[in-house]
Length: 273
Image (cartoon, rainbow, N blue to C red; front, side):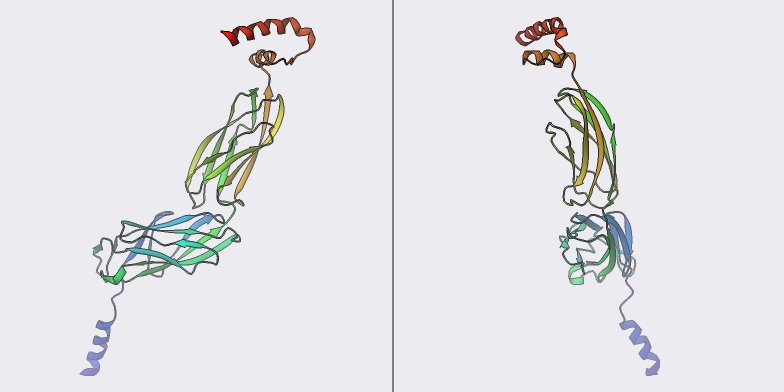
């Protein structure tokens, strides 16, 4: 009789198969079970990304367990990567990870574990494997127009569209080079998996046709950038001419001196009105 009861006792002593799961909300929505895996997407070297889960889960009987997970942490990270594990006992749990700024391009893997501290809910931990690709191609860029005309010192506008296809929300910096005048850089944020459209003003006070370069780069990852060429034609206008006369500057030949005299008078009237 004992030989028939022993297998039954052993089965009853074995832990029940866990029906717990992890419901991930960032960088996108996915449901992951014990020993499962998830591909997170693309990230640039040195960029920060987050993995966020809901704290709710279910037990082996399928009953809902509020705050079943109260800690999420990452292990087995590549050398040089920085991790900040989640806080505890919050409705959502987030792990912050920053790959090494010197990380080579390619695929990497690490472990994530959700736990019930002290296992008071009796659900045990859930561990799964996460994969991420370190790549320079984490956003798409469009800048328009690429041929612009404006008066001296008059702002012209470039409309920049950033499609952030990576998993990082790190800011981007817009910089313009190639003009004599100083044009201030601008920092913008296009969250992951979104498209942002931004207005960037450019100025120049010297007439001519200028070939400038617009660069959009990751604030935290210098190797992540794209460029667009901008042709900026700067022309003098009547108003510019009038103001230049008051500074003693002649833009047109001497044969137009009578016209300049009239413009000079207009400039004086406008200045002292």
